[in-house]
Image 1: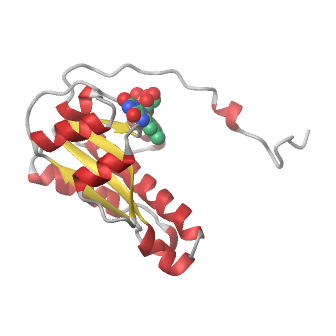
Image 2: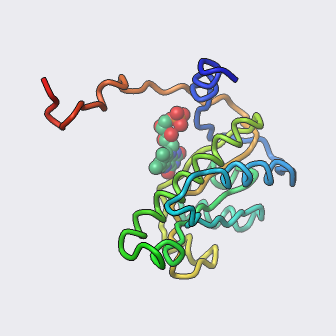
Length: 179
Ligand SMILES: Cc1cc2nc3c(=O)[nH]c(=O)nc-3n(C[C@H](O)[C@H](O)[C@H](O)COP(=O)(O)O)c2cc1C
């Protein structure tokens, strides 16, 4: 893949919120997890964990905890990606809280791109009642659910959403810039 194909690969991923019924295969799940394992992490501690949900009843409960977002219920699988505070804080103390969230976020990004590489579709869901998700998924207190990645085969194409021009994010040298 050359650099322009890579840009196309990234640009062609869009969030999809309607899925066909059906399951992910074991090899698809393994591929997605394998992609996450290649993600960088602070001190290579990989301070993330994931709870994968296939069960319809549990998906419905998680959907309710995500403020009734229907695509959460409809997806073939939910990857509840969690920051593992203990793993990171044992080396980095307070700073480990931030590192664990970053580790989980990168891992989730790699999962999302892995699903895309398989021709699957996904939607990153951040809006959730964390306490409810924690309780449904049985998470211990040192895990924070950072994102729910809904994955499935899209029933409808997602829409491309416009972006700010990259330059609008950028400041050279300092916030005020070097003139
Ligand atoms: C941190 C974060 C939280 C998000 N939360 C939600 C969410 O709760 N529900 C949802 O449908 N989409 C959610 N999204 C998806 C965004 O709406 C979507 O990525 C954005 O509009 C850009 O569209 P695209 O993914 O199609 O490029 C979230 C994305 C991120 C990165």
